[in-house]
Image 1 (cartoon, rainbow, N blue to C red):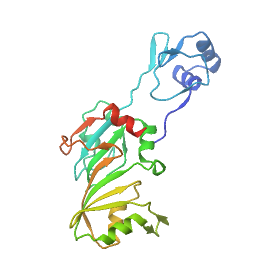
Image 2: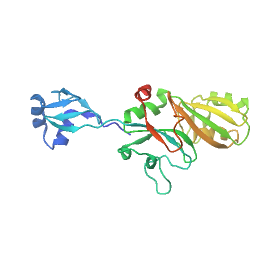
Image 3: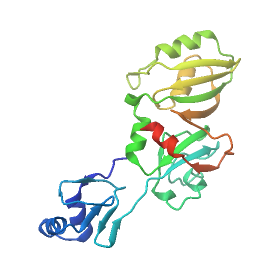
Length: 235
């Protein structure tokens, strides 16, 4: 999603249904405040979370929202779906319909899911260039060998998209359970990587994204707001 960022004068023209000359007069007269300060600069950049006020009238007072959800198996990572319950349906939040998902999990996967209305924050979270760790616990149908570790660390080439995955870390936890750390999220990447060994994934659970760890107090389907420290860890 794209951030709704732009010039203050254009915002005021649209919001007040007036022309730039009238907006310029409002600004020069000191009648417009942004985030508590009088602003006279027409070029001032504002976004969807800027607090904008004209005289005593509040024109915009949106607040960013950040939610952690323990996604259960069988719930789809989408805002709307005609066949399955969605993660949005699980939220008890007044602005839930304004949220988008930062890093989806497929229908049969579970674990940490983050939702927000702040597109700049979610872009930073999911961009491969920022190399934010995503950690998963993966259960396989068959035993895992040391050979897997080197193959994941080297990256794998997928000819259909003509891409090579970034190096991934694999730690063997049990005969058929591994912890996998990725910096990216290609389509069904983990399942396809294990597919190279003809070893089907039978369980996929996301434990963390960056420094944000799934709260162990949250049962599947439950959610809570992120703490200020968790939000700031992505910036």
